[in-house]
Image (cartoon, rainbow, N blue to C red; front, side, top):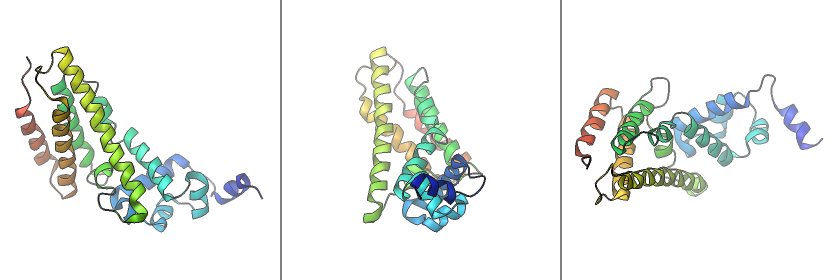
Length: 203
């Protein structure tokens, strides 16, 4: 029997790869990479381990696919924020998006990209590195957007775009940690609004 036949036989009737991946995402989001066992994942996905390996690869590969889905779904507010016309509007959309995404009643609290593997043993190192790269990529995109704002005259010429990007992302990640600790959406929104009081004035 070839691998294709095994894949087909290993899948239960009605197997929906996208829906199963969404359920895996929620498990990783709630429990983190190491905390999400294969039994947790396959039970939530409604498939066997054989089907999981055939459709997604191993646990690390499944996590990477779940992270990509998270980026395109719950965390898509980051890419949308970069399209705002001013740097201040970018920061506002970023922080407001973080507040909304990390406090949805139908989703786990906090951010998969921040809490998925902050502390990790050796088996989870690849997942931890994937999340570090994910956060770095987001920070670089925001830095580049703020650099453009300086060139466009939207930010003062002496602005340090890298510093401002770290300021914005640190606040967004802090919002995520506070959300996971049970801080309410209303309180987090007040924090986001207060943070923008220190935003550089438009030249």
